[in-house]
Image (cartoon, rainbow, N blue to C red; front, side):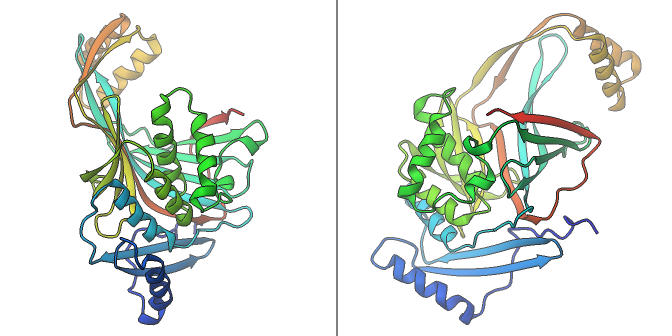
Length: 363
């Protein structure tokens, strides 16, 4: 049996803990929140599952008697309180952290003349990231839309230099979980994002780290508390992740877009993230003429999905010329989305697919 077969879903329901199981955590939490405006009761259920070469952590957290969050900082504090009691998923030497995700990506489909439309394509993504610094890691992707499915695509990521200056899962495993000690590390990462405006750097960096640190809930909790101090964050009461799971979000607006971190309404578990347009956006696209090989490839694809060979060749003929398109995205459209499906440990990544790309990360 493949070692990945037994990976459990992180967010599946797990059995209710016994009073004896819950008592130490409840006492510790009630002591911590005494006198502070936080959720009054936390029900924590934890199950550690080991199957062959795979270990997965399953968490269910139920918060009761709280009422809805009043603002973004309140939501992040509740999420931090819930995450702080969850255990780290600790990989051993040579192991990988395996994460399964769903994503939505917006793509532009060009039509005849200057016509174009934008589509949201769902994908399944999996990552196998090594616990040891400097080792390659694997990204596996496949479209879930039959019209866009081109089979499994693997990308192997390597680095050509000492990874000491590169943020990796191995380094995140050793980052502090105290917000004061964590802040300068996050600010140092944000300073690298020189391609985006300064006011956006801390938000985008913190949001990325929250997604990447899912295997370390105590670190994620500290990141939530840092995010609570960011200027410009707001509460969005209705949101959803890439799986369509409804939730409540912490949002940040920039450049006609709203970036959201989405949480479960009841447990405040992190579900995923998405970006939504807050105004109509128009862009002009120039498409240079295609190569004969590309034209043949597109023609074959159109025949595959129902066009006659004659109709497909007629439609592809425009690709022999330079073209210009105007693409309009309405207000309220999801331009990208992400959802965590499951996370666990594996002793190895699976055999590579037929389609493999290799990426060397810059130093």
